Figure (cartoon, protein in one colour):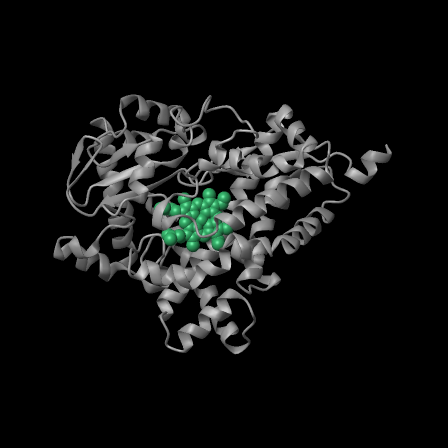
Length: 436
Ligand code: HEM
């Protein structure tokens, strides 16, 4: 009963409203329903931008303008999740009643992604020091070791799916180390993470929702067991430190601990896998750019940011108006929703010259909004960049003749963008190639 109510509130009502709104010209509703945009959303973002910096919709307002996206994400007039206290009292009560503490997903409070200060400041402080650029740089040797080990396991193979055998495995191994997750649990966590990934999309069918909800619940159960294990045998990982804080009754409740740990773990691999797979595809499709990074390895960092700009693993996010406000020249009521297309902002010709071109030397590639901006700027940005740089360089160094092998399939999620499978031919590994 609670599950059906949760589906009805989060997805069912939205589906109904969206199909009506789409008929009345709501751009976002049309976008979500049109299968053509699943593989290639970029013409849609162009269309939005050609209609104005912000476009009013029946259901949601949308923007693909770099300046407006950036302004909304940095402003105190907008919040990341709906304000439940401001909902009509009956609706607020139903939302709270239907919430299942054993099935809290990444966009359910108290996830960092949807809470605001003062709670947001408190949670972020607890985790952010582990992910500063300096702390992350210290992880470089261990990320290199993980990459090398995964590549060793490919020895003797030629045709492989680079997502399954590499892109998937590197980020989970790295974040698992940070959070003290044992190797034997990696596959389980990966499987549940993939099943739960559509939880970021809104408007799921009941069938899809049941799968996602079941995966979120199994993930939470696994996390409960993992936390209990760390409580008995703490390590020097981040999660053991957070468990200690909770045990000492300091600053973190059990639900908050699980929400924070679960988000870090899932965000730690569900996004970076897409960075790796999209960057591999872009580099192989643009041999002149690959040749440039091969000739000048200092360009790898630029290649990572240019991939993040052009094929962002997170294509959009949303914000709710905290008060009646005006965006550009559009008056909006308190509670109004604006969907910010990060993937559209990243191709705004006002900021990025020749925006659809993949250019590893692009001077301002790092200005992309793929990691968001403002208070909710991605905690793991430095880690993701490091994994991208190390992971790609190690792969292309080991396999100088790497080539696409046709038949790649994109993920079907809308918020997350990347490859579900990307078949490649590895060719001779470097040591053999140089003696051939
Ligand atoms: C290429 C990889 C990644 C991308 C594209 C990405 C993207 C994002 C975006 C867009 C947001 C903010 C969403 C919003 O403003 O509504 C975010 C938040 C977050 N990310 Fe990442 N992320 C990546 C990797 C990671 C990694 C490796 C971690 C693990 C440490 C991580 C942890 C988080 C957390 C905890 C938040 C919540 C921050 C907050 O709301 O204050 N992310 N990420």
